[in-house]
Length: 138
Ligand code: ZN
View 1 (cartoon, protein in one colour):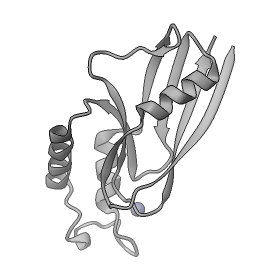
View 2: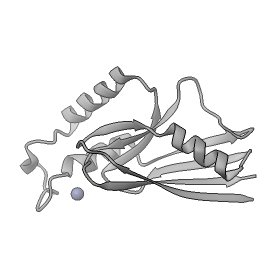
View 3: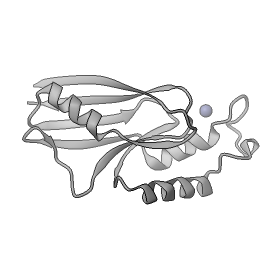
């Protein structure tokens, strides 16, 4: 069995953003040489997400508005977590949007359904953060 591991680093200048990381995962897959297997992609930070959905800017604005209604960033004093920090909302947003995705690899390609793409969701940007890509298979 082949095994491949890579950390992808990001530094998002804004507090929140959604980034399509599918090209990075494709590159990892090509380097791994795996033709049949599984890829796991997960955020390594508890204020960021990895999820699969459509690469459509209206949808991404809808996500941001929806998450802000569920867990507004301000006032930061509304969160008990925010004693000495201000990212209480980011922990909640990450929980809703998820930690990781798993995608099947078939014939050397990511075996997506229609319109599926992999995204990094940042909810507390302005610093360097990592995503783990782990590929196993033959
Ligand atoms: Zn925190």
